[in-house]
Length: 307
Image (tube, rainbow, N blue to C red):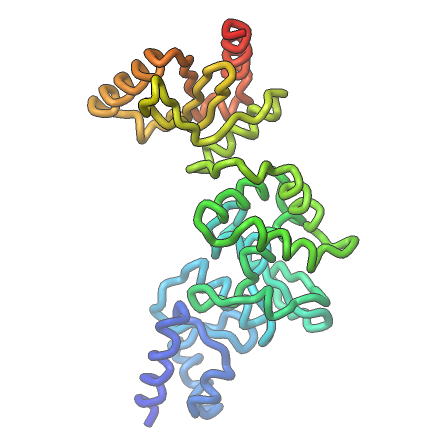
């Protein structure tokens, strides 16, 4: 009899990162004595009050987040930095378990980052990989309360790039939840208001960081993912460009630009851009980390030469 109960439990928890709540074992039919014996024997590992992990199941951050949600009660969901990690949009932190609960249902568990809310609509909740989590739109809105606006902007760009959301959906969420005083809504609202709706998405986080560096140094935002054409023929598509000055900007990653084949490819491409009358300027991670002054000075000089 015991064996059949364990098999039934295993079928469920293999989809839940090895994590389960005591309510599950009650529904399967475990008695209190059977539960206690498995804990004493080390077959079930207690994580929080009423939340367990099957011994031998790998300890993962997703399992830890699910355990935190189960500890928070039936309506708790991963939020903010934990939700950003679940969605893999940037701005997350896998070192913490951050959850959102309805007001007055806050769990008293050490080690959890818990937020309360009066507004946790079913429209703002979904399930990803067995983890109850705020939707992408609600995650990006709440992320503004705990992350720098530039980090939130990069997360928005990543979510759009991955087609997890759309600009209209984000604006609807801001209007619906954007009452005065709600944490994070001002950050997301400004990002959406200042965004050019016609701007093409960047293709990587590094390209988005490049835009931040240019902006921080007082340069206008270039056109992203710009196609250079010469005499009606396609030459290259560059990460960003100032077409009026014929300046092409490219982020040069070490992984993509290393090796003989990459050298030949980059040389031919650069020669084609120069041959079309454009000025190519490359940026590296070191440039971005240093604030981009060298590159921005080079861009300004190229603009003067072009003018």
